Image 1: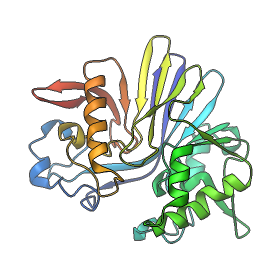
Image 2: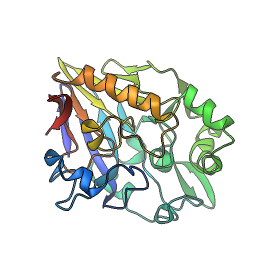
Image 3: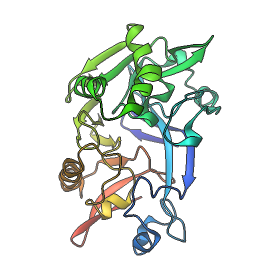
Length: 283
């Protein structure tokens, strides 16, 4: 899937898509709660009310940069809390190359945050060592985000993620730590959207009068557009996450900004509009 935004093109590269099995993440999203939200079907929910979700990357091609936003789960990784995310052997790099983006052509890797499903392909296993997958790229990571997880003691799983998917990039001298409002190039800048993690950012694209926003995880699923108060079990600060969603929806509703969801399956992108006292996504 591709979306043109002025002189910028965004291409979706899927690693994994699933229907159901997401109650561990969004326990409020029971089938009984999802079925009344008719606009979620068919792209984002099944006919029996199960969530459809995707893990994917976006390649953002500008006139001067080739950026990959978030790098999914990766292959061969161990010590993941979700069993089928361990020791994966998927075709993501082949799919990326077949789409016209071989790893050596990527000049920028942007991590919206440092959770397991956003940094996995930062590295790959080579002769028993984790090495940067995108060896010619500059890896951009939030300074607040990195400092937080490097010092966190309450999430032992994050130590494994940093060890195999972040630290090898830092050690190779390819990491650049940026502030919340960093501008990558004329068309691409960061937007602070904290709550899911302390340093979480989204990605604003602006070109020739057109705009799009890559969400990251300030919302995981479009059901949170209908229910901004639904927070995920992975949120660092659920209250701040709710405030962020309400603020962003108010800002985006009725605007021409194309919202491109980092875990949205199906159509993946649409525009947020007001729906009575709430919001919905028009695709």
